[in-house]
Length: 486
Image (cartoon, rainbow, N blue to C red):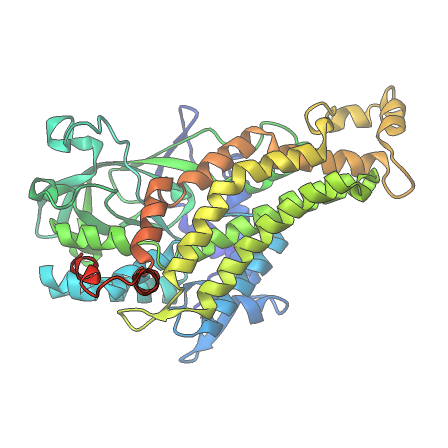
């Protein structure tokens, strides 16, 4: 089935406990900090029902229409369809949003690939992941993913400090397991469910087994509290901060205060190998839509910079063209990795088609690692006026608007209002509170950079390079034995 936007909004009115700015939020669909992003998610649902968008947003199977973003990938065309769907969404919302569901459901596909590992604990857990994948697909619910813990003192084991710093098992009951602790999750307060999983840790230590948990949690579950950061929406007028007021995705500290997780929602627990497996394979699918989001950020930076250079005629200067070329190179390198990882896609252990992990993880790290430098180049090309331009109210004041029209009109093509809008957009993209937040968010959205580099190392086959050097250097075959043993 395909949900409607109204059905999605109604699903959030479940009595969930949400706080922002020290106040309890009665209705996330109406609260000014949540409403813009809830409206975006509702719009995505409604797009799938409209004649214009249905061909790229939905597919029919077994006499039922479902969301393309949630479809298990079996072919390269499945991945192409997902990319076309994301493109339609980003252009419809006039911005970009990272956490809307299609990017996190892939983490469940990683568990689907690891059903043999889950069967080591209990065959029921393997069945649970299959059932939940079917549930997400057939009910079109908004599914997100919770990963990061509050950390605590990382020089100590969890048992040597407050045990609640990492989410952990409290006890088992006939109905399920009771868990306590906390996680951070973007979009949790306006999602329906989350895949809650262990953070990066030394899962080889059996004493950590109480912390090796993976389960599905209803975001309105009793005992679950959402403590949200202050939103960016409403801090300034939409005319002055268009992205902040339209596309802010609210982050949440999820506090699990003895929350019951029914057995049918438990995917693994007290199983260190399952925890290690999911950490090692977690992003083999979801890294694709995350990296694709960075392509849209690259396009926005390039477009804003190119417009600013073109309107003043600076695009004819070689130095300016060189900086624009660096933004183009950044954009095209991300795109090349996205295309290559699907062109070289590989069968997964579970029978799905996964993007080539070496190409995907390399592209992801490049996109994230180079983002700060590219933002700075875009700032240079947009010029200092993005940090000194008055707000929209000044341009509308009859007593001073004439002066602003005079000094902000460039030529017959670029009048003051268009220039003001472009500068306001560039400021929100590159210089605002939201811009700084976005930079840090993208750095840690899936894992810290060292984990990204480890993923590249673990998924690149060194064999060809080593054999090439062996032959060129005239080494004996014995030198490869040590590598094979590792």
